[in-house]
Length: 527
Image (cartoon, rainbow, N blue to C red):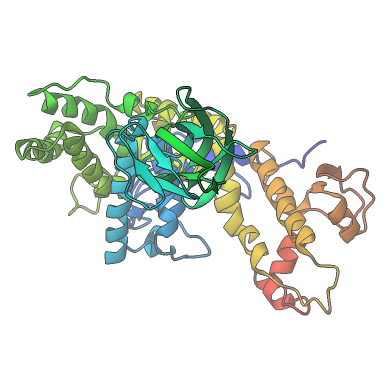
C-alpha cells in the first residue's frame, strides 16, 4: 500500500540528532537546506542557524529505569532487571527521560549499590556441580524407627531419615538410594523419596539382602537449602513370625544435569589466566576492555589506575582474584560515568558552545532509538569519526531503525507521546459501555503500537500520524469500528473512504482522552 507523501521519518530523526550535536549551540553547517525545509516535527528552520545560537546549558542526564535495565542487560548479558526496584522516574513534558526531572536521591544510591553487587556476583559466579552422598557407615541414625549397624540404616517402622543439602543453581537433580528389603508379607518393602516435605516418588523395593539395588528419580530444585528424606512406607510385623523392614546403604543428590555451569559470560569477560602475583595485570587488561563499553567512551590511563588502586588494595588484604575483580566492577557501575550520560565541557567556566564528540552523539542516538547503550558498530562509527556529518548520522539511524531494539521507540517514546502506556489505566463505566472488555483494551493498545512501529520502521511520512490511509485492526476492533473485516488477527487494512485514519481516530487515544462516562472535548482539544 502506498503511504502519504511527505518528509520521511528517518530524515527527521537524523536532523533531530544533528540539531542537538553541540552542548551550547547548533550544527547546521553540513546539512543541505532542502533536507530541513518545510513543516517538520522537529521544527527545523529553512535557513542555517546563526553561529551565535545559544540554546542554553544541558542538564546531565541520569539513566532512567528503562535505560538502566536495558544497559546492564546489553553490557553484562544478564536477564536481571534491577531497576524495577528503583524509585519511579519523574516525568517532564509527558516523558520519563527528560534530564531536568531525573533527580537522584540517597535511596537511589543505596539501590544502585545493591544492584551493582548483584549484577557482578551473577557475572562472576561459577557453580560447582553438587554431589552429596550420605553413607550409613559414616552417618549414624539419629531418629526413632531407624537403626544404624554400620552396613546400612534399618528402617523398622514407617518413617525415615533425612539429610540437608544446599544448591546454588536451579536445575534438574538426580535423587538416588541404594537399598534392599527384609521382605515379609505379600508385598515388597515400600520406599518413598521426600523432598522438602513433599513426596515426589515411591518404589517397590524387591531387592533382598546381599543383592541391594539402586533406585533413582529426578526433581527440579531451586537454589537454597533443602532436605532429602528416604522413608519406609509399609511396615509389616507379626510377632515371632514376620518382620518387613527397609535397609538403606546410602542415599544421594547430584546435579544439575541440564545446566551449563561454565558461565560463558564470565569466560568472555575474563580472557586472562591469573596466577599468584599476576592478578593486577589480569584485572587491568579486563578493565581496559570493559570500561570503554560501560562508560560509553574511551577511558584514560589515569581512570584505569584509580580503579586499580582498589583492586591492589583488595589483593593486599588477602582477597581472592574474584573478590578484587568484583570490587572494581562494582565501582565502575557506581561511577557517574555509567549512571549518567555525561557530556563534559573541557572548560566548565566557559559559556562558549562546543560540538559534541562522536561518542556523545553515539549515546544520544542509541538512548533515543534503542533506550540502551551503543552497540559495537555504533562504537566503531564513533571511533572512526563518522558521526560528525549528517550522512554518517543518517546511515546509523537507518541501520538502527531496522534493529529489533528500535521497538523501544514504540514502547517508550510513542508509548508516552501517544498515551499508549495509559490505555491499561483507563476504566470506562461498565454500565454505560458494557461492550468494553479486556479484549478490546488489548486490541486498542496493539493497534496503536503497530501503527507507530510501521511509521518508524517503514520510514513513512510524519503526515500519516494525522491522515493515514491505512491502519491496523483485528476482528474485535473491526466490530468496534463497524468496519468490514476478513479474518481474526491483526492486519493492515485500507481505510480510504472511511472515517478512520491517523491517531486522532484510534480508539485507544480517544479512550485515554475521555472520562469514564463520556467523551471530553476539552481533554482531546488540549492534547
